[in-house]
Length: 84
Image (cartoon, rainbow, N blue to C red; front, side, top):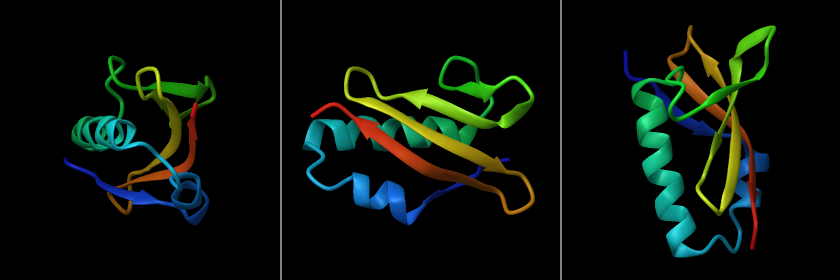
């Protein structure tokens, strides 16, 4: 199953001023995550008791936190943290 990305309003606001290179890393990372959000190479659980709550690094640019919504087929990004 391939998931669709969904960015929460808070994550969209955090994208303001995101450099083009960081945006490119975000897009590539999201594409990989949407193919397999549980792949340990690209993401890891935020908490042990909730494997659907995950985070993924964006190289040296920062990270995202997201929830895998199995029922809706979505990867819901609720936080974007970047160093910039």
